[in-house]
Length: 157
Image 1: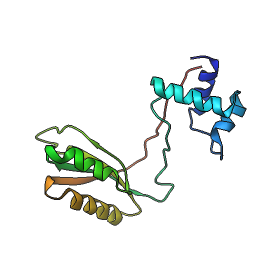
Image 2: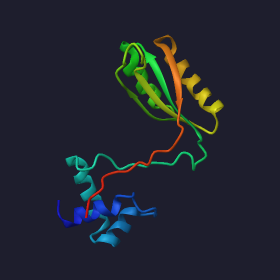
Image 3: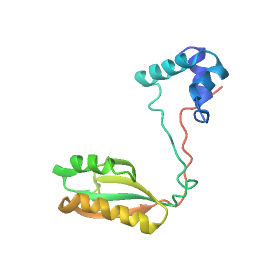
Image 4: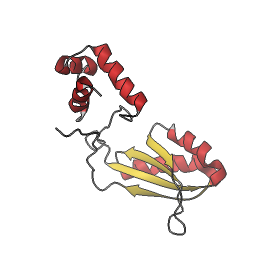
């Protein structure tokens, strides 16, 4: 990593600039061109130096105050196929499979949903349950109670 890469990481630690052309803004701030900034970020992504570039919305500020992790006990032969289908639902922000921790935790499929009310979130869970059908043996909704600060890579000066 050269000095420009380090400057790029430092400049993006708190997120991309909220401008119409964030890569051009970064180029103006640290030097280089918009194309060079984009190429360097792609190189860092490809090398695994950074894992992803994505939007991290504050759901509460957007009015989604009933955020719930829905957890599902889905039959193993069906979990991957059904998980892919659930992940495509417009109200699911992320969906993933995790191992069960029996006997206390039977759930192996997790899907985060966001609603303006618990009634809306409950309806979303009902849509997921309908999609899962008989492959689902149990489920629950774990509601968020606070916002955890999400941070990415930080370079020490």
